[in-house]
Length: 324
Image (cartoon, rainbow, N blue to C red; front, top):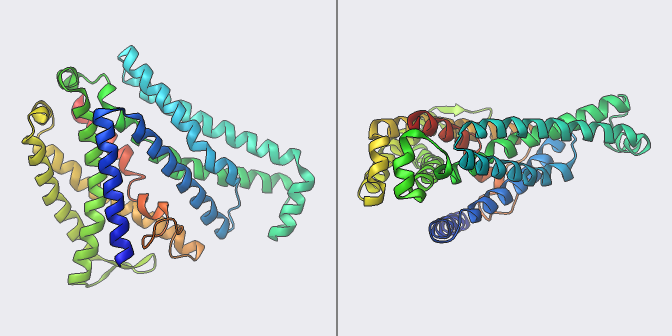
């Protein structure tokens, strides 16, 4: 328990430092941070899939997030230069294209290495299928790591540069205090899973009761899930009011009223718990408790960001709706 607490404190300190660097130095520190997390998470996801029998190209899984990072940053740049938010959508299409092209190249690479693939199939005990089928499945499994977690998690790049997006209702805020918009977006995306996870655990421990999904995650209870949502909404309101006390954020508060913010927080809390359960399904099938051991007392990076993987696209869409 002590290790878990110390690790949590260290994470909060790192995030605080990154926000300071973002405000006073550059947005790119957060970009690098998210990319590193995505690379490690893809490595852990690759290992989990291999334990399930879904063999993949681990090398591609680890380094593909760097390609997505470059693509997303180019999209953000052109969205700002052209003042066209749809560049984000174009970028997402390019990302999808990159995932498909790299997967296809991985498949063709497997076909060109027939002898080595046959040896690998023998070692893995899957010699009952053709080289073509094995290569196709391996490329497809690699594609899964591209999508989950890399593609979805790296939506955080767009949130980090949200101030550069040409959104009509936020133009006045952007012109006066540009960093406000992206800070607000990032803080919202970060605190929802953090509050949900913490209060779900505390409420579930205190109240107990019927299990939420005993076959997937035996420790989670219905009371914990409901408590996590309710307490997150309550503390989300406190965060919103704290933002309102800062003069720089007042224009943003007018664009984003409290009822809208709390609705986003409520739905986001549900999304966070769904993300957590999805990773629990994968770990259950892989027969492991944690995705890794990089974080003392908390497991792997996937164990920490599972709630954030769907949170980034959700917050981006929510802010886009209210900003336009």
